[in-house]
Image 1 (tube, rainbow, N blue to C red):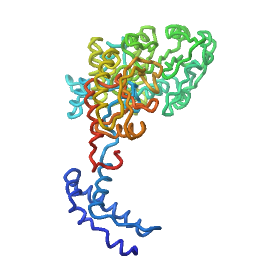
Image 2 (image 1 turned 90 degrees about the vertical axis):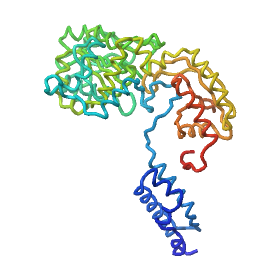
Image 3 (image 1 turned 180 degrees about the vertical axis):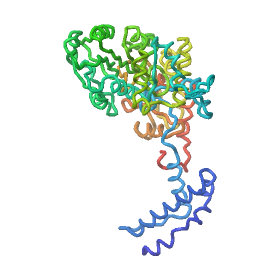
Image 4 (image 1 turned 90 degrees about the horizontal axis):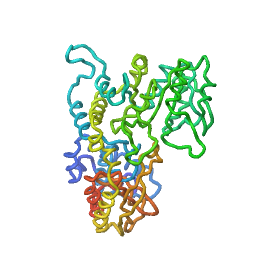
Length: 474
């Protein structure tokens, strides 16, 4: 058939809009979106006919309507969706790290839908500092004189270095010149801030005397950086923060402690060792301590700086402080999270990360033994069984903090593990598993108990998948 004849067989947009599939879609999205989608699809179809190199068939009106509807539904679906984290990595960067406590979600929602006293003192009616929303809470939790909150810990680092050490040397142990992914490399951050990196010691051993010998007229501060995403084991040594403070202050210098993940309580209770504590660093005399809000603290993404009042005032006046500042949503969620730490037992009960860490292994085993038969019953499953395994506190960060766990190991029917994992990711709700030895594992260490029923229902939905669902969802 000639191209001209094929082009005449293409239905009009008006004809397509009368089809049941697109007529129902207009109510779901909007008339304009459906019309634009139909026109775009028809334009592409015409181009294919004009440029054809082989025989081409024009689909029927209903077939074209289905193709257009599927494309629109896929395009309208947001890429940012809630997921169930069954990877066993509790602080998974790709999945947004820490989940917020219910009180933090409620506080965030309340502030989001209303105007807020972000920079106004309600008593006087005068302008105030937005960080006052969390300043007293951070003083109480850390013992520091003052604080500042910025967009993330990388921002906190570059602000501190730019404000306190631009054009001068910063002494850092060679074993602490970290790269944490996403193009964040400490030497590059130093250069961007205007500070001059001075490496001391060796990769595995840095003595106190290495810092002493490196101090000169151009030295601004000594900096300790917590290597949160790797460990040097064996013959390794570096001075504790208290010793660095003593050296720095003896020479009239500052000591900055970038502890990274930011624990407000002792994580050894959860079987996690070596995580520096904010208050301990302040009590050791560090002039400035930097840490994340969305890791061990269990709050929203932000970077927190605490320390001496005079230093925080200098940082707040630096031009970068405004560029890196956070808004009312972050501050409201952070304040609500910090209030939970009034009582450590309450924090463990209500901060989601701490809930997951504190879950007894026996509870995880019981859940796995209960869920495995329910999942195995579904037609898309060949076998499902509870297995003991190891979960991790973090992935890119804190990757060596291993935690005992129980998983449901699934052998899918009529498909390989990779295809089944993709189906889970694209399901409702979306489930993110891990693949191990050609089986799909659902790790319950990172799954909240109230999500157990969703695991079963999502797998059941795969067995009863809507045949009209868009092809890209399968």
